[in-house]
Length: 214
Image 1 (cartoon, helix red, strand yellow):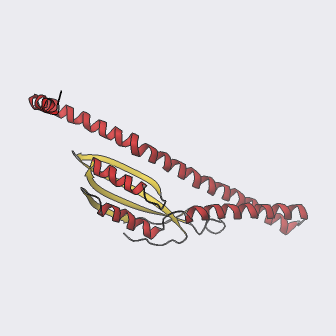
Image 2 (cartoon, helix red, strand yellow):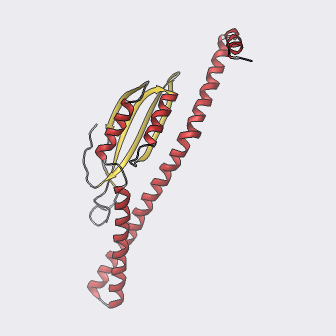
Image 3 (spheres, one colour):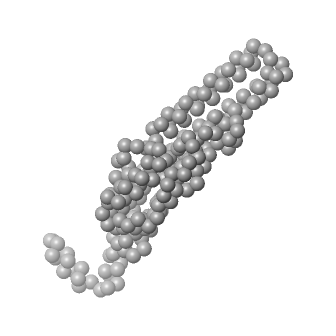
């Protein structure tokens, strides 16, 4: 059966049957987006969050131990406590170095907003609705004692509209960029088929609580 035969059969269908076929095609497209692109992205988001949470929890535990040992040293200093104190300091410095390496591998906050807009501008059949830099967030609960007090999460919220394949190509272009960043939120909704709306948030880490434009 060739394309002409299929086209003739489709034209003979009732309006209700045509709508049902279009809806089935939409469901298949959404499932394809999730399985091919969004599911790996969501797994990456979860892994990145767990990595940062693990680093922060380890740092908080070490900082608490350091404060406890500092109090002990002030009361009853001895060689054993001094050795343990130095070991904890070394662990804390190692964690700080590990996070520093992660930050160095990421795109800078200023570059991230520019890249998102630049790639979108070069994409066909996509329309930018808004590009907003959200408030920077410290990754340390206690900014005075934590080794991570100088590191901030810099999120950007991007909203745009377009057709499915144009959106898919844009996301693939972002994933192919050499600079790294993290995904935090992704929302895909069909408003007026085949037009869809995407709202997404990505973020990077920086050493300053700076405004990154947008």
